[in-house]
Length: 297
Image 1 (cartoon, rainbow, N blue to C red):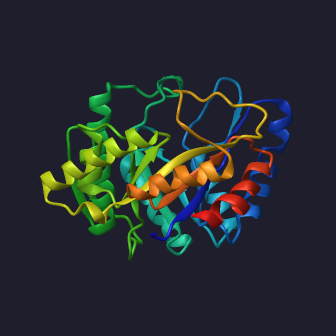
Image 2 (image 1 turned 180 degrees about the vertical axis):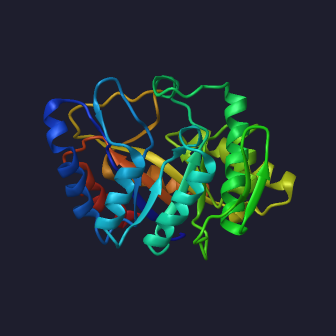
């Protein structure tokens, strides 16, 4: 069986006054426990969830990357709508430089309409946002490869723009999203990594088959794209299930059942699991995973 790697997704939202006061401490406690065991830490990119306390992605990421030099850090994923793509490329390149290559550059089209409109950005239709993502990714790649870089598109453009220091070895570019007609074609064209987010096994297989078809259509080797999976873990002894938007698939059961399901994902090509544990901020689920699941993978 192939070597499997693990990352952990921080919790950026505090749902009540008690967790507001302990949110940072709770996250740091988790990170201390996974040191030397997990490879990476990931932060989601959102700005609001009603009136709940929520930490901004990039600020949180840079704070943690400085505090924990042994981890890789990734964005899961930056919304391309939220930042000018040239600025995004510059931020990514700077963090890659400061962390000596420990950044994984995750970006997607952006989907959370309520926060986008609340913060004053336009929210175009899905097809337009995906076309914008295509151009944003081209600008990021151009700025990392050329000095100066020029690009003219329907939505974004740069003219003789510099991004110094350019990455000597560009960060892995992870493109989030799973639309089979448009987004996965962008993944096939540009991504180093792809991410399946909270799908069950059958849907994940379907998405990978679609990606494989796009790779064949453009003449790219499917094997050159790393396949990652963002999953929720819940053990039988958890007292309650937390409700998530969009009714995502939850990997749940006894430790042996969870290990068996993860092995099925590995069998279809996943070799990097980016996980969140349902019982956060408790450590019980994490402990079970480390002690009773990971040894069986």
